[in-house]
Amino acid sequence: MFHNFCSERCKRAYDKAHNTVDGGYKSGSIEHKIHKVGNTIESIIGKIICTFFIIAIILAVVAYLFNYYSKI
Image (cartoon, helix red, strand yellow):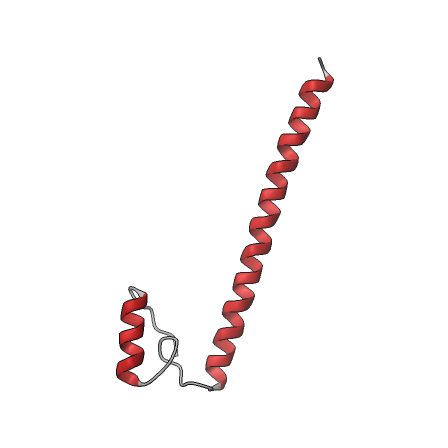
């Protein structure tokens, strides 16, 4: 059961009207647990990717500065 909502406000209104949680899931259901685990995994993967890119940028700047100052 997947719904696209325009905002958190619309999602809360839907949940209140249909007595559900997180945009259409029954509280405590297997689908809701899977949804929560999926969101957690997505968050962790996003943080890992962002950290990787930040480290890559920092290393590129350090390598550039090292090459620049080693030629002087």
